[in-house]
Length: 135
Image (cartoon, helix red, strand yellow):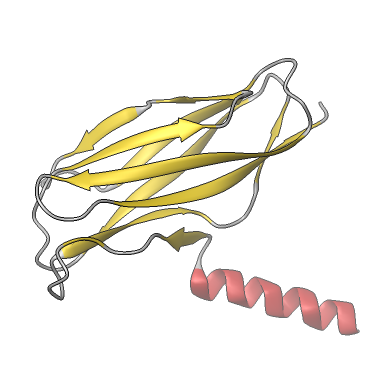
């Protein structure tokens, strides 16, 4: 019974808060003129030699109307594409990243970091974990 309640509570929290976390605010410090980078909050599991898509999003303030350049880097043993992308102010704020683990990647946790730099204002960054597991 306790396990059922714990599982139900976990599912409710995931539904309410989603599966992404946000970075500290970038852009301007003025309310509504900044942005955040949303990355997955749960570990992404990847088998050796496997490729998986992950969504990274920009959360724009109501008045933030700038292009943002994203630089994406992964720990050694992982590769990510694209490594750089510009999200125009008029474009959809979601980017699909293709993450792959090398055939001989060691099992364990790896980090993927995403840095967002606007035309003007402060940059911000976020990171998420990818777990390489046995095939």
